[in-house]
View (cartoon, helix red, strand yellow):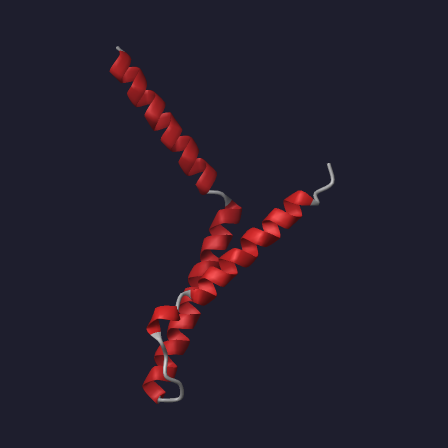
Length: 84
């Protein structure tokens, strides 16, 4: 009996975790980050092929990380100064 309850508890915990992640706001954030990565990759690829700019491929994900940091800081500031 106890293992069955443990399995139900773990599955309900997993469902709650997924439902916390799968919100509209998080979907928008993920789409924004993916768009930023796609744009930076396409810009780097085109500029590398045309010879316009030499690209260091190690730093290609920095724009997406910057977008994520801006979103996190903006959300934290908005929550801090939210009127109760």
